[in-house]
Image (cartoon, rainbow, N blue to C red; front, top):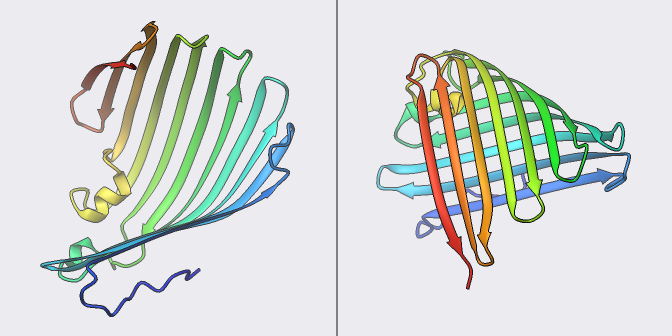
Length: 230
């Protein structure tokens, strides 16, 4: 879908940006089920001293939600995407990645204070621009849980196991677009976040993140912040 013409002839224009998002709902906000059909198109182009660089991401998606019971719900998503990058001077930065992805998710919420869910994302992607035919197959299994104690305490945790089968050069622009900061092979990512209001106008947040990606060493990251409202 060509929504806007971005090939502007004005030589004084150094950058352009556009974003389009359309969604068609069926049975929206129904307590039992709903369906969404939509598309998104994000484009930007920047002129630099070495020539122009451009990026365009398009997606067509179908989402559905089914509340199996009062505490159990099932969501699913199917999407087709195109991720393009252009560069006037650097051929290695040019790619056109076409992909399709599915993501079923099961959520259980037995009370207002606790919610947990598990999801599985399966994605196939291939670079159609280069004759090398870089491609990737991604399996992403995620578990997440949230616990809220009134408005004073919130505890959130996530654990993901991501397995990527990538064929191509990992340390290249197209390789980074496929791997998104992860490594070829098995990746483990987890985090725990605690938010707590310790006084009427003071709130603290503590976050722990860990990851083990491919052959890289285990990484632990801790963060803490304090916020005050006057």
